[in-house]
Length: 397
Ligand code: PLP
Image (cartoon, rainbow, N blue to C red; front, side, top):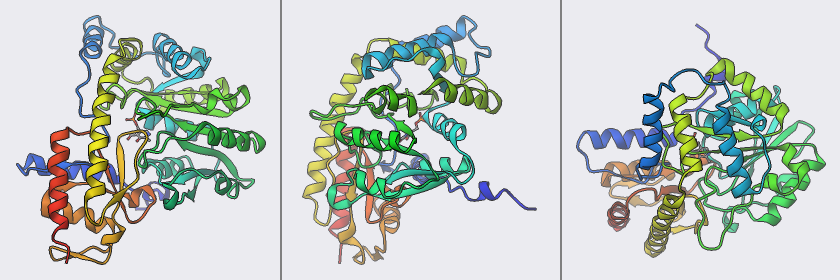
């Protein structure tokens, strides 16, 4: 039987694969330290859980409008005004089953077959696959490792053709932890307006910022770029709500209408109870975010210092999100405990097998010679994991 070419062309998510493998090993009683997770280790706060319980008890358990409740959309508009200085009304907002789903809707709403979407490597693993699902072509612009993979606008400009439909940006970035500066965003905005391109701006890590870094939403730069931007965000990371599956977009009303129509057939509304929980999360007391950030800061400082002190390893200091890219290129071709390290994939597999430490090779993020460590795990586990990595590397021949 002939299967879908599009379906066959989609690769599984390597981050979820590593995470599943590590969780399976843990279930078997193996003491795995997993740096693979893309989710905060904190529990969803009680005030959010309470809102969900109340929703169930009050019978808020039926279909809602396909693109989300008016109340949640209004709360999202208030948040965008307060945090991002952006004026939107509920008709601009589409609430979906996680930011991943929002991205899928966004590309489906704007792409025709053969359209090109520019994105930068390192990129989040799902982007190229989501773009392909929408019938478009990912055009990857490789950012320079020597420049800590910082965005370089001239390189982007060189890739614009008459097929280019959009530029996809992600700040703070997964996996590099880089935060785009206002001046760079201004240059991208100018390019997008000049060539009449959409900007898809994935801002899911906006609250995870270190030192003096601040988040600038590209849509807030001016009205023209706001009209061309589809802003993507959600509650998964900020409120430790990865399993609840609520993401959203803010866009012009024409795009929002198409996304809403698409969603009305593909999934209908996101879970009604999770919508009530998200409403409470976004409108409630935000002090817990600051507590989480304080912990992320100490974890980041510890992990960076330790990695920099381990022979053969170096890292890019992240300014945001909760990931660290570790350069392992000095190990390529070397033998560790009988295993020849041919690439980052072999290294990651060897670490899982030999010292029960799960990390993600950056191959899936479009970069060779790097692994990604998530520090969304407890500090004591970070310490144990790094001790194991250090001990493993003492076995380099
Ligand atoms: N965007 C980026 C950059 C991510 O890293 C992730 C999750 O890892 C998502 C979007 C998806 O978030 P959600 O859980 O809301 O679908």
